[in-house]
Length: 326
Image (cartoon, rainbow, N blue to C red; front, side, top):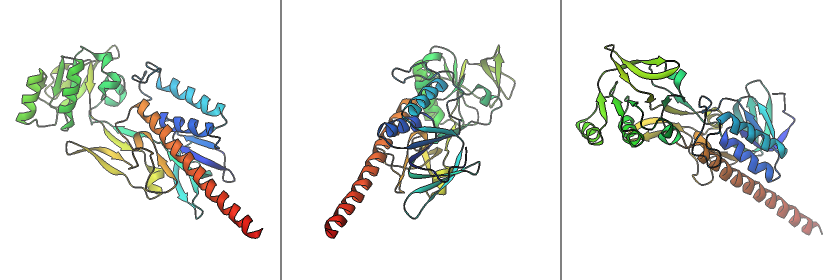
């Protein structure tokens, strides 16, 4: 990114995924000057298709973002590749955003939609298959593997809940006990659902013709599965926000920490720091693409409302000053 310290925008959007671009589109259509800083590393990049987004089902994540960037640019918004690493709140309430290449830019308001990083369990080979046949969300991928052999890797209590969900899409669901010790209650639930339990630590994947066919156990046994369900840790990409004093908080499920996020108002995305909003997975780790885009729109409306209120206050003050002089 070129050095843009002398440039100022009504809003700088950090993150060019579905949430950031939806917010940017709303703001440029509201006649705001908008810059989107995009690192080009969307969470769902490994997936060939996305599903459950009305009107976009089956679209590639890359295709959706390309359309979104074109739409934002078509209304005069600017999109620049780069990574925003930190931001400073200036005495006048605006922000100075600092990027990894040393460039800076000023923003009247910030909308941060940097998403999260999926930290996968420590089993060799998972990363290369992530988003293909190593999965976590049945609403994103369940239809594609319906009725097939599905393995659920257990390394936390979340696995039992996952097995319960995925059993709905496939009666051939197996829970791989791996490193987690199941309770008697867990085993009763799984037995009632017809979910097979296989003991033994998973040490690798079995691949044939670039397709997952099973998992290997520590004793050398191979358990058939065409899809492997895992529970990644959802770690918020929060560098810009933490630099502004907005900390991450733990996200829990069933008493187990599954990740981190930055807290915000659920309706508007407003953070505890005036002038900063968030949208998408950085604040809502479980949200899917359509929901993240909706959050981006809601946050953008709140940002524009805040800007209008500030403009109104200045206009009233100027009007009063003129009346006093007259």
